[in-house]
Image (cartoon, rainbow, N blue to C red; front, top):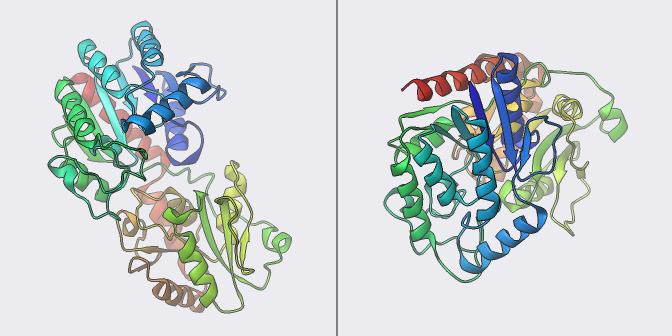
Length: 401
């Protein structure tokens, strides 16, 4: 079997790590895998870079100017189609496409002519809306019928002037109508339910497969992090995100910090917006690409807190649980799916006082009361071997239809 994988990222962050795990699994079973991404070379022998730095910047500028996302980079897209014709994949696996690097309509209409099955993996909601990656905070459900007059023009792939959401929505619908065979994988039950209501609901295969968790790498571990960070006698609350901005609950973390007992400390792992000022009881340790280092932070913490109200999965939450650390999340989107029995607590959306109450309960019980159940929940339902085998079954089902 030959598989072409296309994604805005690879080997890093949530969807990039999951895709790399899947590529390695496929190669280990003797399949051919080709990776296409706008990233520069990522150490893969079969890696193909889509476009150039200049092309990506021009695409981003034109997108903001004219209000259309993934309608440019046609030259780069034509070159990608040459790769398709050269390698002749049995299935094309795509994930994040709204990264200013591919002409969505042109590419998939050409793929439809070649009658190649396509598997769309939903890491967010862009593939079935006019332009938005998320919609619950805006309380907008126009995508169930037809997008227009978007309330999020200045966010979620912002545009300076024009609302092109009606055109983009209908163009996506036309693409899915043109494909002979396509599948949809949602990374949570919540996202699957939304996808079934959308223009993607008529897919030949539509199901939920959770993001894979490498339970051999993300497991309870000992380290001297507490000593290094001066946290030996503290109750450590961990937050992790690529960028801990408002969408990930930065102001909510600050509010929590103002209400915490003196023995509590919040530790952030990830980037922060420029000029962000933090209170003294919040420690920012920066971003890490090291899985080993990240697992140590998860293991070091007494509790993991997810302050985002819009999560299509929440891989950092699952990784923390895999390391034996209980979690507190909001009762919104896919968040509560990750809190198995005895794995932590669910609070009302944006209820900081409710989060603090749950933290105090975990402190009172002791982390050890939760660790085994957290670990077992992830090993049972999201371990890498099981989830990757499910992907391979879907590939085969699409090809053999």
